[in-house]
Image (tube, rainbow, N blue to C red; front, side, top):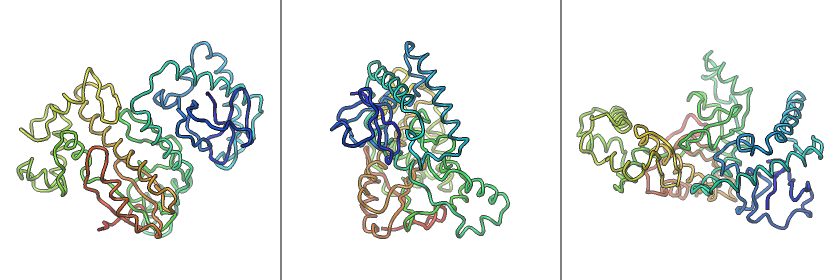
Length: 399
């Protein structure tokens, strides 16, 4: 069964199915079980539905459109862009309005029929990627984040606003989108990026994070101690040190040849990701063994089923970064399940950090939250936990 959601918002329920536009819940198919559509939507909750966009690797409809539909699709796409442009000029906020209420129904039927045919073409001409279920689960979480407005204001930011450069940067943030629009396919390794126009959660200066406040009572930040180093250890089946991994490296790998943690961290990574580096010799971090196991015929093959084409020089870098990113995103999905029905929720993800918008009523769940985050698919990683009333002043929490 091929169908298309007419709008991607949860509140805008409407589908195109079997040549008809359906807006009344009583007229909907009894089930979308095993249905096929282009992209996840808030109005479709059936987990058995498959998505052509994910199978295509994040390509747009124009990129996957078969030649025999190209001319017709381009014509319909121009009409669609014209509608959107007129709505932009009218300053219509589509977070508050349903798209299908503002365009002619005849156009919708024509456009969605072509979209259905392109979707069918994608399913019939592409294999289901091994990583599909993981990507689908992550995208559904990113959808939730996409439609949840951040609390961004200048309360308790006097020192920030007193600096001219910070004030200018802060005003730019305050006057733009307060929604995080993550791009699941923005990087080749799977590390999250954001679309143009998104709130700049991944790139904003650290001082400016003071502007971001929880909607509930606290921000609870969880990140792995030395995430990428620990991923190397896990992939090599080496037990994780139950202490700071970079201090552990100082003693066990660098033989105390560096004076402090930061130097140890820089030395370790400058060696790990540079195949020509001989700074570290005869280390338990066996780069060759990792490549032999996970790099075949010009492709890195991760434990999540991700297959990345890359030259041998960058292969180890891609393997570790991709595996770590997928570990964190997978933990975010599991935490979202844990928080289902609670007042707390996942606010945002920044590289190997997950930030929970924590309600006081859920404080008793912190230990369980930490346990879910720490125990990932390939091992138990030591976790740093911090809390604060904004996203800048995070302080270590001992549990």
